Length: 543
Image 1 (cartoon, rainbow, N blue to C red):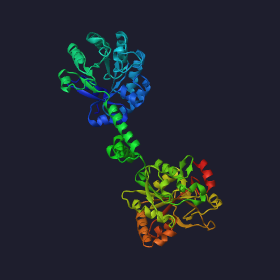
Image 2 (cartoon, rainbow, N blue to C red):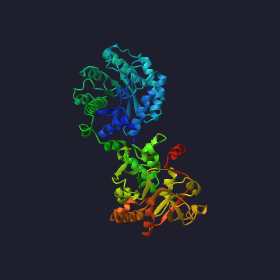
Image 3 (cartoon, one colour):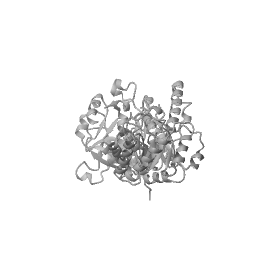
Image 4 (cartoon, rainbow, N blue to C red):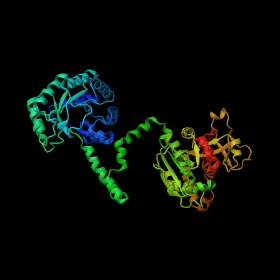
């Protein structure tokens, strides 16, 4: 049974052994604290403010701090004690704060007896006024009355030493806060020796657990704190400070060198970032919740040609990188694939290959793009076709936009090989362009949606009798079809002159001859082949 975070923190606070809380200021640093082995997290107000680029003077609103704390809580399984400054207002603000923290899984809050808006204790500390004892005690009582979880912790932070008021004032305040219901006292000091906190602990005894923050008196051996029976030691801001040191060094180095050669080996890999973010868990979740047909699906996008028909638009980039609605055609294609769970996408480049540079895609280059056709490009990505453990392999053109349901239909339809066919022949013929027309085992009808429709032949002549539609430039292959395609590509490789003329649909009859059945999924519209400037205009409505 999982122990509540509030219960975990309560046990740490009340333990007879010295416990440690490590500072964190966002979800990533919180995960690093847990990974390091700490049992709890100090959500530092100074560090959170610094990470937001503002001063530790309540310049970050309490709701902004709350949002950061929520991300930290979601990212970890260990308890968080929030540095709640003064409670962000009066007793009513404190009540609301406690309720909000409980709802977000934060295990406790520490509030300090200064005035709102607060100033960091190490900035002109002796000049900072303190709250009236009765008013601050009322704030503690209001917080305890507001909590619904009996184990939620409220720590009262006494600033008497910081303000220069001495031991008697510290004791008077701590006792008032204990009687108001505080679960622990945090006694703070700006001295470089632990004398003040040791004097307080000797006078205080064991009335309530005592928490310390040895930022200034850091040279004191930790065993001293153990011997004096302090409850919790907070390392208050060191991850934030370490991050500033490293970021400054890295930024300066890159600015100076204008390359990454001295930096890349000194920082964690991107893979390590993914690991901390929990990418492995997401991959496992995808296996459980995404359609299994899409789980092990991959795609190869053939995008090696220039697209001369678009004129000046493709002088410095291939057609696949021409922008539509603010994004390259290839980006739209990748988005449609990812939306149905196809994450592994390979692209075969050729013309102006360096311009084809979208992130998170695999690239293969066809150096002979000017003298070979589509099968020549496909051959460049043969290693993808040969990869093991792939349920579905999609082959598609880099200038065809598809509604995502078309891709979903392909990966969910059973068969050795499945192609998408637009049954609206009238619109297709009216475009007056080169097209891949198909003859199928039966035309589109209500019946065809419930029966197995298969491909009979492909024609480029719109006057061919018995045409049933136009192939939409996308095909899905399963294991048998992939094995047949690998064998066919090997044969073609023995006679490379064929690569000068062979296009993708020319493979269909060859695969059928190898025993591959090609199933047809009918649709109407739901795609656009970008072949002209007029098509580019029309894509505005499509996207």
